[in-house]
Picture 1: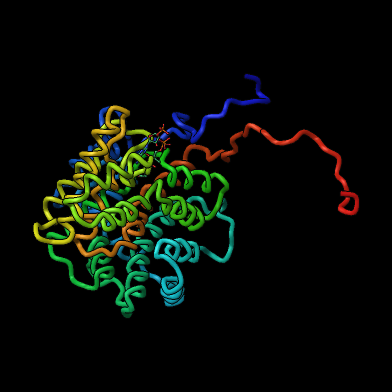
Picture 2: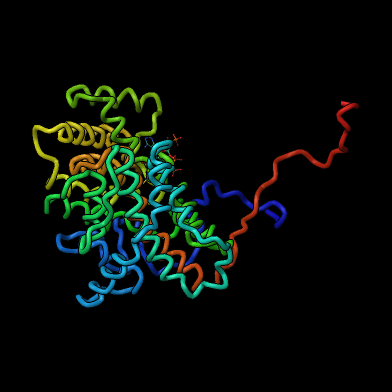
Length: 383
Ligand SMILES: CC(C)(COP(=O)(O)OP(=O)(O)OC[C@H]1O[C@@H](n2cnc3c(N)ncnc32)[C@H](O)[C@@H]1OP(=O)(O)O)[C@@H](O)C(=O)NCCC(=O)NCCS
């Protein structure tokens, strides 16, 4: 190997792209922690998304006063202008909620484009985006359902505002607890996942935070990443009946179909997030409901696919069961990934700050050129 012909690492597998102290994914042990605290502990009842935002930003558990301060700050920062609301509502009428969200988040950007001179506001701008993105998901959901804009109510938590605006109903304490846990569970997943890496790449160009977040939303939308939660539930709906599920899944695997919600680049055991989701499923997926049938299909997928692929290190990831839980608390299928995006905005924004704090050198990797050598141009009249 010479410096002119660098060795290609497809998908940058195993290549570190940053030093990070935010979250740790241990793919062999099946462990995820934020700032050293396990995701199982952080999703216990009583922990709020606001508390986790404080943990991610501050680096350690927040006391009651700090949690209150963060809660108040996010509540203040979530305000949107009438123009921003109208823009998001219009976008919701012409495209998938995830693309509407991407556009609406980009449209939160300022009139100037010169973030480097304002970089001391990186925390504030990041917090504002976390707060406003959740609000925008609610705005888009109301418009998509043909409902009028209601907006956040004073004192309403981030989770409650989102779930009420998305479903059009005041959430039960049970559903609210699950929404909090879902937002916490998906808030970060190390610097190397595709959307967080995207947020780092866009940050490295000194782009405005709104450009960082909207680019990351685009990366998350794909079915190989965050979009898998929507795609897995669509597959279960297509399978329809738990009784016939096993044979259908066998056929899909025979056809080399990539089951959404299964497999992972880093985890070679069952994704710890999928275990937390199953705890949540036990709380809200009630027997006799459509979601219960879908969950039975998800369990069959786990059984059949693990039998066939487990010895290759392929197991359920977070998206195999998350759709059933989203559906059980009343979130429409098109909004699974936007809710994931609202949660992951926390991780993207904390990674953005860490990227700036660590010197922010522009990402500029190499390529292995496989095209033609130098050729003489021939005018079109002579070709
Ligand atoms: C997550 C994912 C993108 C990781 O991709 P990756 O590390 O590049 O792994 P590959 O796609 O190269 O897969 C390696 C092998 O496992 C197989 N495999 C991976 N995921 C699979 C799945 N979900 N179902 C069936 N087979 C799968 C591939 O077909 C490939 O087999 P081969 O070597 O015979 O060609 C991939 O597992 C996937 O597409 N999963 C489904 C989408 C999903 O759930 N995404 C959310 C992730 S949190």
